Image 1 (cartoon, protein in one colour):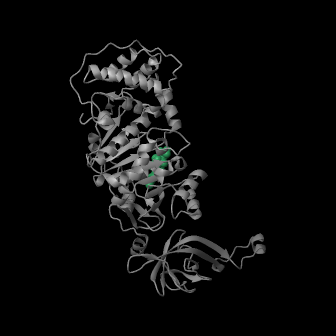
Image 2: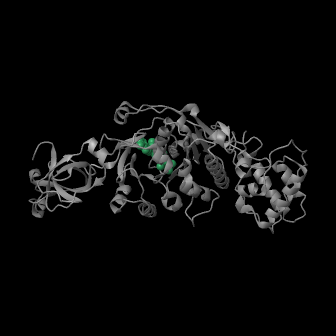
Image 3: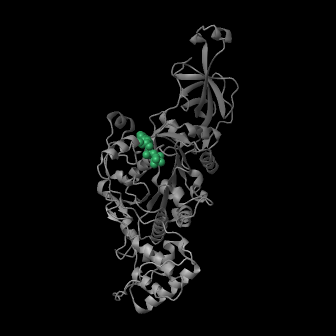
Length: 546
Ligand SMILES: Nc1ncnc2c1ncn2[C@@H]1O[C@H](COP(=O)(O)OP(=O)(O)OP(=O)(O)O)[C@@H](O)[C@H]1O
């Protein structure tokens, strides 16, 4: 066998696959990229999909008698799938004539791998082609405009990989809005500690993004002391539509009618009014169902989410900055409502070019854009709209989920880049392979076995799914699992236990037949100075300025 070659083609060959006799046991591994010189196409890239080792001379009798096989009699056969070569127009093509038995097989070089697979992006370095030193870069334009998903079972490295992407987007000054249900992304502020071996392998140095990251809490600073600021929606001059958008499942036609009458009355008396003014007027309404409405409005008031000093979308979306909406202590109902309001405002503001092109990152996306039939949430529709229309307006979407089968297919199918880590649930595997071109049963098998830190990248820009060894983070990783034993031990050591403040319980649907008599109606407040009653939900909820 010729030096430097890793084997020789044997047996029947095709244009899309062949077998080769491996020169020595450690010459190639499953998944390695190889090249073969083809008589008409020049160097052709191929990949080893499986390896079989056997011995023709070692018999069952010899095995039973305990005799050791002669290693020199063994041979390893590699099964290869042909990827192809680029023609002079840059198009990928597979050979039209089969390879010849006896042709030599070589390890593929970086240039051939990059040009054939289409790894020519330069913007975002996300890791190494698995088993090689070849860096894998994605194009920011493609990622932001054509959206991206990160899917994996829990604990497989979703938030780690998402943070790698977010670091790259922050380096390129793309504004980020991160929906963070589990307080995992504040760690982007802090510099990580990378050991020398990893620094050398991945060619990255540690870094923290400090003041470029701002964490907002829709609860309050007592519940979430690590947040930088509270997040509030605009509570001034609300219309019926604004209020029913806050908790749509609680509004019946009778409730809407009472609200409509009351708001009309408040408006005729005051130029600027708050939720308290509406509550006062509803309490004076003659309908029996008024107490249900008062109760519902009181619950909105107690949640503290509405304010006369709201957080504006212009403040959240700024060049080079990431705003994290940390949902610690916020009920699922309230989370869905906030995501819905935020996404609508972001989309509207992008349409009007009021904010720069940006990326919306939604962790636990199956909760905010659930597949029909699983659950209902107010954010579903706007996320579907952003997925299908966001690219026209430079609004990118990154969806992250551990339950691909439970995400709205209309959202998932719009993601041009999919990063998938270990998935074992059969329904999730099925939904991934159904939704992606180029994902077959071989790929499904591969996904079940992916080691931590290795992801499959499927992208419009890359010819076929590839495995990447995700690079080390520049920042410190958050979201580590809680050490249960250590946690219990530490809890034992505490002499007193102060329960954390909890957020209000989810609103139960108000029945029109059940009379709930809440606190007495509030005292009427004096009229306030003149304000802007126009401008629709977007302007009202977020206001033009703080
Ligand atoms: N590319 C990587 N390099 C090094 N360590 C990694 C990598 N990816 C993940 N890990 C490690 O694996 C563990 C789980 O990762 P991560 O927290 O991202 O999982 P997850 O899928 O987001 O989990 P969950 O669903 O519970 O939030 C972490 O401790 C992290 O340090």
